[in-house]
View 1: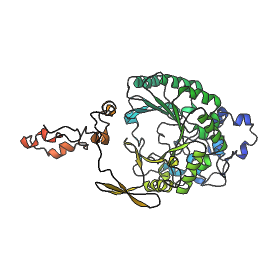
View 2: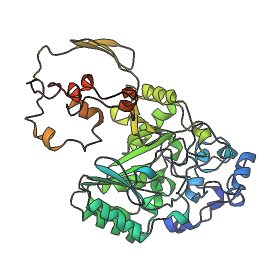
View 3: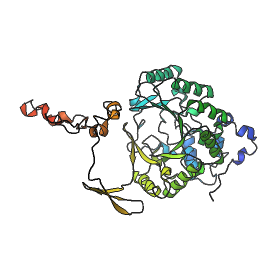
View 4: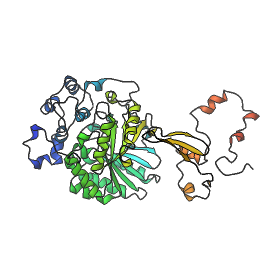
Length: 444
């Protein structure tokens, strides 16, 4: 029998009427952000008090609902660590960056990040219901002065209109669900007017920080803009409350598929068995685990970082030990703007020209016999190969497999190996043109 999902409310809020407690606007207007306010709910340790009294730290705001999930007698409570700052945030660490994912470099207009060929990230606000201490966008999030204005929003829409390769828009920020309902509805309406945009996604931690925001009215409004997907952000089983389960139920009944994105955090969820409990509790409330992120190299997050090997260990402990759809992808979001790179344990042990050797989660090793005859896929006769190729410059490894290019060279590679020499007959460029390799063409 599964452990029942419960509701919690800190003692200080015991006399708050349910009508107020369940009003998301009341939750927003009663967020806690100072040492004095927070200490009325949980006793602070010296490191927390020092951080809260330090000028210039990343913004602190906690909803009464979410702080109620903390065990006040446990200074190492995993919910507490995510939202109450520590003095360790002030420490620098090797490779720390302000914008570790180089999002600003991939931003053609303010608030829009176009990193991948067919999809964009649209930052619609810099405000959140509460603030995660490891936030990858702490350079702008939480700062009212960084909020995007009407003119910048119009620039985002115009860019999308003139960029037909974009079929998928992810709304994030900040958190889109803190926007005024009419503003969010207008935003979704404008996006749906652009014919080549097929999918709209929302990334939000509001259902976790403030599940009372997920009203039936909100779900009905979102349901008008299908296909619409929503990813929430739960890091620990303790965050899965009765209120979150009810919010997810309302969303799924509105036809909105739900996923979860976690961040691997030292001292919070860096335990394989805890992660199994997390993904299984998520699937019970109809949320599919999507990504488990390696913590980014952002300022203030050094004390949360784990070795990458810890993430590999967790995936090893999930695969085969729980349902396949409950196993997230472990992702390193490449510093410098390389995008999301999935990592996993090695299941392919070896291969030859006629068989491969693989192992399963138990260590069972077997062979898989390759076909002796295989008619090679012909890209010349395939309409998808002709019509759906990636944009030039972003084909990557796929472009090499398709025969569009033979090399991917580091910047300055040709100049380096020219060695400053002269152009002569042995350097004839025609030598480096494929003689039918990958293209199905003969040398003549």
